[in-house]
Amino acid sequence: MKKNPLPPTISGQCYCGAITIHASGRPEAIAYCHCADCRRVTGAPVAAFAEFAASAVTFTPDDGRHVSVNAGVTRSFCASCGSPIAGRYDYLPGKVYIGVGILDQADELAPRLHAHEAERLPWLHIDDDLERLEDSARSRLAPPSR
Ligand SMILES: [Zn+2]
Ligand SMILES: [Zn+2]
Image 1 (cartoon, helix red, strand yellow):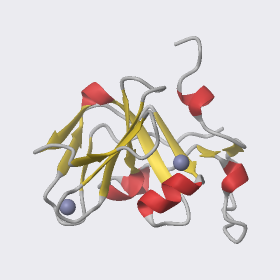
Image 2 (tube, rainbow, N blue to C red):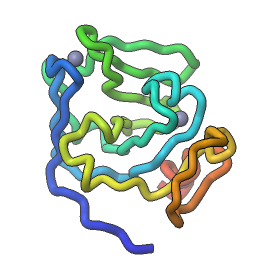
Image 3 (cartoon, protein in one colour):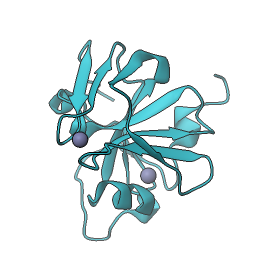
């Protein structure tokens, strides 16, 4: 599969600008997620997330208000404008997931796989040749060898 080069540094901000994001490292993975949770969090028919090492990302002044609806999943939102800022999963320790849409270099952050393809909205058709996982990208994002 052809892979585009990733930008060396990545920045971002929420809708109102109260929270800014700086990543010193490149994303370790970028994926669409078609699950119903991600749709509800983003309000979009499909989400796209970049995975970073949590230690590589700085949120200023912080990563917002934490909300945990499902056990083991913490999502944070800007307290002022409500933008989704970050997602953290107990089963993917040391990683943080940030929506590609709030990153300034989104045009260079093309997803490389589809997760939860089984939950994709039936009217949404993305014409690419990326790998499609029927369920979570969990096994791909945290392979047992790591
Ligand atoms: Zn905001
Ligand atoms: Zn999802």
